[in-house]
Length: 217
Image 1: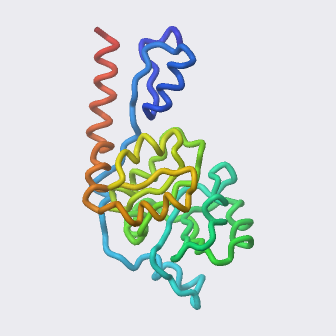
Image 2 (image 1 turned 120 degrees about the vertical axis):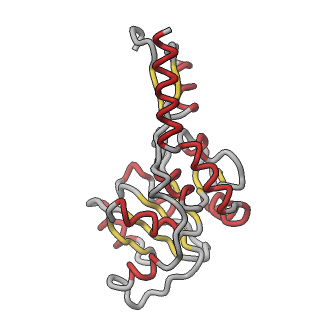
Image 3 (image 1 turned 60 degrees about the vertical axis):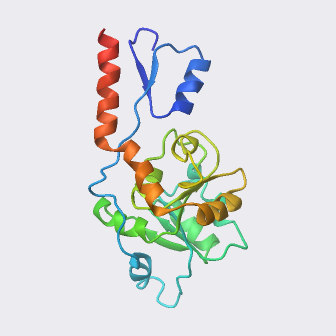
């Protein structure tokens, strides 16, 4: 890396970590989201999609949702194990670990994986997006959720703290239950959508070009 004119990272907090390790010329290049695909849709997708697998299960509000890979490092049990939460926990995504979690947490809804063109409808039906991972360097799914008007609840770690910058778009707390409750209480759809615009493909493309131009001069 020392020979590079630029080392680009996905977030400011990751940049700070690298600078602390004496990396030079570190700049940010966020991941982008297609805002012409991810935008607020109507409600009802979760109940519709869950009817086949869970015909007798009632979907109660608020819907607390995670979308992404279902694997151990995503720390999903920190979310699924939370008790005394009103509403329904919904997991969208698949992996072999999904079967383990389904048996352990029968009260949750496991929808499995869905193609990208179906995700905006699913995101939009959530009342809060829950990001339990502590290892993601960015977390594009959080921005996709915001673009669909859904606030984020997460731990105050790299990635999450670079995206959730005000209480109107979500909440960060070492206690994930408190983060969920605060995100539901304080956030609003318009602020979430506006925040996602900071990560549009146009914005991140300009960010990338700016880094290249500065390296060349």
